Length: 358
Ligand SMILES: [Zn+2]
Image 1 (cartoon, rainbow, N blue to C red):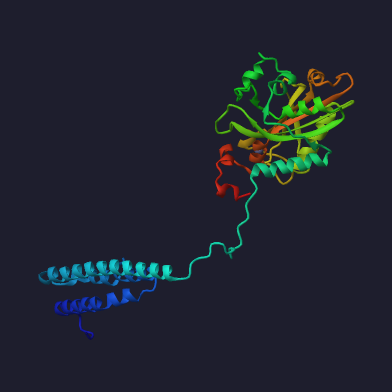
Image 2 (cartoon, rainbow, N blue to C red):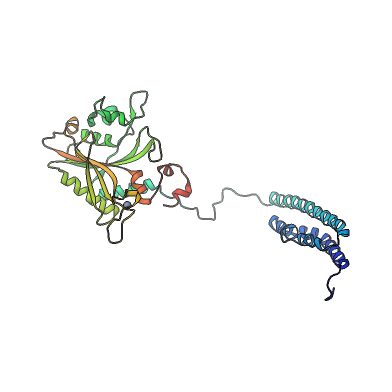
């Protein structure tokens, strides 16, 4: 075309030439595509935003108005041809690939895989349970197991809950038709151990427990771990010593422990236990307070107390000779504190993306 500016006539003819060229070329290009992706790429090179036909279409504005209509119709006709050609080639290609698949040697599904299988992850609750059990094992506690479907006696009565005690209302329970219930805490294990063995004893009771509770921080099924120790001359000082060791080994050296008086029917005295907040701990060991500890620098982790003399007597242990302590914690709460999990429900959703983070 030389250096002369394009005259309307040459724009028109060069456009017609480009259209003709594209009409010649598009089908062989489609047919040469070996895969569906290659075919789609080729189609995009023509019809895409920056495609060849789109570029021609953009030049339409420079065509004299009198010829614009005729050229425009040609462009549209070619566009239809290209679209239909693409569809046809796509169908043919898929049929060809399917045919090749069918005539190829059959898959042997019994062959071992070549990719190494990705390993599963332990659930955060299992992880913290193992950690807590390990800490108490170091302190000399052994694991004692008990059933999840329990007699009312072992779950309430022997622990000092009379039938009309407000605490039995507090813990709305799942009852079976035979009058048994799903245990509402792991304290049934304490009762079973004390009924069947003579002191001294130091046991750990991990397990699932059930209550009619269901919201963002409560689940109808959750996990507790309880530790209890019965011997001669056991005092609150022993309990506090064990708690201090637990806090140090579980949450790091120097983690402070605080006991606040509280009420549970099966202990006297009873206390709730706070540890130094794990979320706002500074590198120098101090806590500056945060929303999770309500700016107190402490977070509640468990309940504890000296086993009530009545409970000891209920299990055939003489409270004048023996005393003991018990402490219990919710494993979900420990896991939430450990890993900064904001909602208890995440732990029961079974979403592999969640579990894979631990
Ligand atoms: Zn805090």
